Length: 191
Image (cartoon, rainbow, N blue to C red; front, top):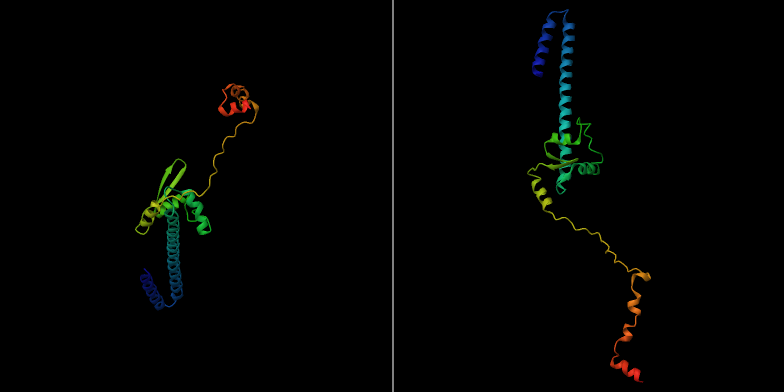
């Protein structure tokens, strides 16, 4: 496209120079055409640069979120991943700046995640790739760690200390006095 424009510019310049008086008008037109072409090419490059920048940013975000999702044992809540994202990156996931209405839409656009909705909660899972499949399987096979929290033993119920909680009469009766005396007791009585 640029070569065609350059050939057109050269041809126009030659024709204009042979006609004498129209040379300045032709040169102005050539300069205007050239600047318009340059501006159009630059705006196209800016769009391409913006698009490439956006794609690179999406790829970077996808890599960070993939690392967060892969390091967790499934099921993985999207809310928890988004809460952890600023701890890694230093800023929250700014999906609006990239033109998305939600973080879920941004992550869907990358094509690297699948989502499941259960009630109000959204769960995210990374679509397995060759690089991350073995890591995901190792994380899934991990045993959950035992709680190191020491729990206090349940308290034993203490008996009531009031006089009404036990029957005095059974202990203070003459039952023991009415029993026949044993050998030792008889010897003591005899003395």
